[in-house]
Image (cartoon, rainbow, N blue to C red; front, side, top):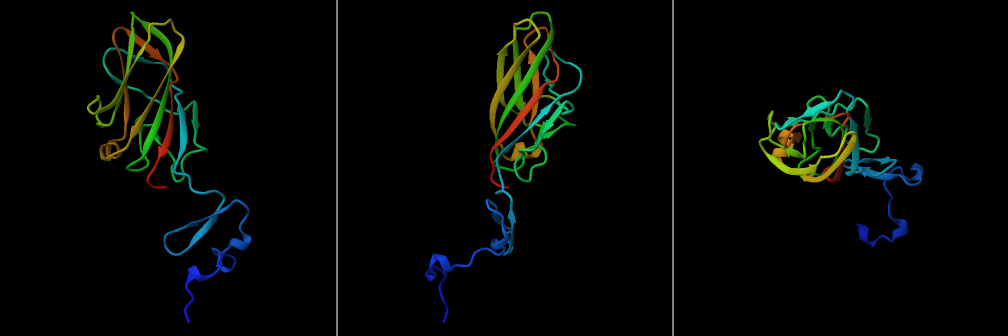
Length: 198
């Protein structure tokens, strides 16, 4: 005679294998193939990484130029989403999303260390076209920059990831309205705010 699982009282139901030796607070993670393992923490689709450039000043003028962040001064990845090693390609200066359908919050920290002329405005363009110049700008933001260096600027924006973003990643281009600005040791803080896969 078969016994239906939903007829078994709670105290007599079988627990996942290995529960007797699992440490307190650990979770069982199924592998999709009829088994699984006990893990110290549940997989986290959310998390963040931080990269800070270590090179000399980058000079920006009225022509859009790619922002470079090589991660040489600082790279923090201890709290990255589960299964994610990097979200920023330090060689090609591209945000590389983990999966289709993701959303991200990106904060740029731009230390302004010098200027020539009288720049009044800085434009930041987040582009998913994958070319050497902006071709598919998904977010553009402007900031007044008429102060006297040194000072720092921070920009935060939210992005969602569809097919073109997955295919090309996202580059960041910067330009001034006039004159030039020097930016030294810029940083990027990337938070994966939602993800469809772990």
